[in-house]
Structure formats: structure tokens, C-alpha cells
Image 1 (tube, helix red, strand yellow):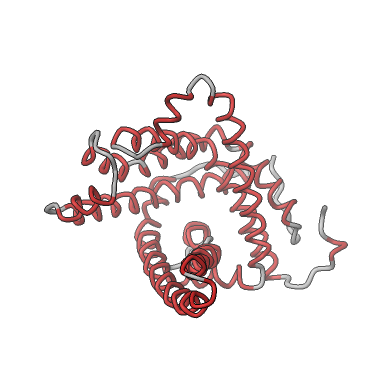
Image 2 (cartoon, one colour):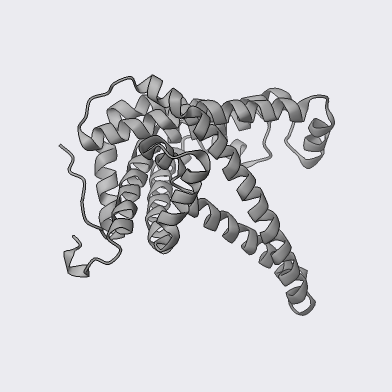
Length: 295
């Protein structure tokens, strides 16, 4: 049986325990994770159907944006993804907790359905927060870029703006990382869940970022290790994917993302669950001697 730590742990310990939990629950989490990947494929299917075999260029995108009902239909697809994805995420988080605590499943669909309104509203709030943050970051980056551009050139100005926008995305997403866990596991409302996530991360931002960075690096390395042996027999196919996107290549890449989502989601959610529990323990016991932490 999986034993949760009751004292604050180092980032490496949190990550390894999350990986262990993901392995333990992989069999029961694979199906919901694959369904989540399929839901995430819906916008790609919509674009692929509109593009057909035409190249996905800027002119083609502008042409699509001018077509009747394109934006409204795409927003409806994204709303469907948000609603269905939130529901499946609730099931996955709930199942991870069941695996960690050893409790039996009971009324899972009804439970996830009850959390759905709060999850959808919180998701919309996250999107609005992210857009506001990106706008502010773009303005700040534009001002700094204009000041540096006079001395270092246009390339430096663009680079500064891009760095500011990227930093804003990372900062906001790390702070709001646990809003779904707060809703599903602790019964928080939409606004309270966002505030709770920020409060947990506030004094542990770099610790949280380090665990995420380890996860991203390991996922990328796994993808590289898997893709390298396939690069020779499928060289022509991979070369076609590297060119200008068409509806067909977008669909191919979407299927690859679906497979990646099904394989890696159980481990990623399990790592985030252990990290969430660790941050909650740290908030209750903010000062713990290093000697008491397990290596």
C-alpha cells in the first residue's frame, strides 16, 4: 500500500514518490487519461477538417477568421473541451487520491459531476487571469524592448518582449497550478481555489517550479528516447511532419499528443498530487528542520 509522507520533503523525494504513485495507479488511470487526450484532440479535428490538404499559413488563417461563424464555432469547441476535460480531470484526481489513500471508489461520476460547475468557472477565471497577465507582460516587455532597442537593435527588443511574456506565463501557471486539486479534494469554490493555490505556492514557488522542471525534462527525454529509434524507418514520414502543417499533418501530430497524454498523464497528475500534499503540510508546519526531511 502507498504511504503518504506526513512531513515536508525535498523536491527529489516529492518527484520520486509521485512517480511511484503514478506507477501504482497507471492501470486504472490509463483509460481516463486516454479519454482526456481524445477530448484535447477536438480543436485539432476542427482545424484539420477546415484545412483539408491546404497548408496552414498566415494567409489561410486570416481566411478562416473571415469565414462565417468560424470564431463562434471554435469557441464552442473550446468550451466543450473545457467542460469535458474538467470532468475527466476530476475523475483522474479523485482516482489518484483513491490510489494514494487505499480507499475504494464510490459514486465517482456523481462526485465529479458535482465539482464540474466550480471547475469550469475556475478554468474561465484562469484564462482571464492569464490574458490580463500576458497583456501586462507584453506592455512591460514592449517598453523595455523599446528602451533597449535603441541601443541593441530590433532583435534585442523582440527578445526582451518574448522573455517577459514567457516569464509571465510560467509565473501565472505555477501559481494557479493546484486550483483543480483544491476544488476536487478540498471542496473550494472557484475564486477560493485560485487563492488557495496561490497561497500554497507563495513561499514555495521555486520548489514547485523545480518539481515541474524535473517532470518536463524527464518527459522530453522519454519522448526523445522513443522517437530516435523510429526516426530512421519513418524518416520520410517525420520529414513530412516537419514541414508546413496541413489538416492531415495536424491530425497526425494530434494523435501523437493523444498517445503522449494517455501515457504521461497518470504520472504527471500523481506527481502534482504528492506535491500538493507536500505544500499543504508545509503551510501547516512552515518551519521544519532539514534533518527531519527524508533524502
